[in-house]
Length: 215
Image 1 (spheres, rainbow, N blue to C red):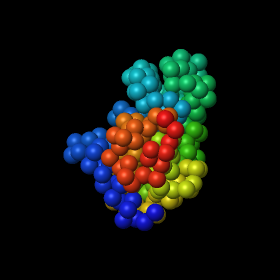
Image 2 (tube, one colour):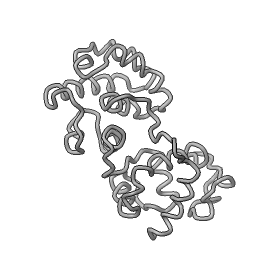
Image 3 (cartoon, rainbow, N blue to C red):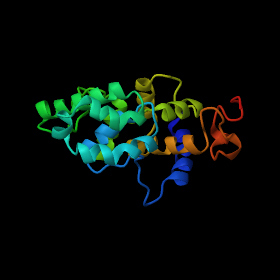
């Protein structure tokens, strides 16, 4: 796909979902530590579910020092609604320990350092860099971004690493910080996984899959 055509699609979605006061993050956080932990917990669940346990979790464990010393069983009890809570509890405790041991309790602000933390892949690292530090050198590719990038013709790949590289090459850096938000927003409202509402889609005339997906 040519950049000009892709940018036309993006422009339509941007006007639909972004306004001057739009908050570009679906998770409710107050500092880098919170967005890191919440993003790890958001795997395979909804942002609503993660936001629902946020206050309880950080009331008990407000920083890396507190969470590093937490009981696995107590953390599991709090985060259980997010699913896969055994693995997630171990990961966020281990990540907190790594923050204390290697980064002075501070969430690192580089991709390479973030990727050394338990439970952190490129998607999580990109979200932390975007929202905690205003660093927009990559694009977080989750299931929504993956699905819409393929349907709209932004990529022919199915693995997140290649999709991210395709998106970075296709779009100018000035829009990278918006792509995750607008694609997720459109996915949730219109271009859903099982029953996309092609008849209501503002970019259906530019979509290679419009009206061809089995309803």
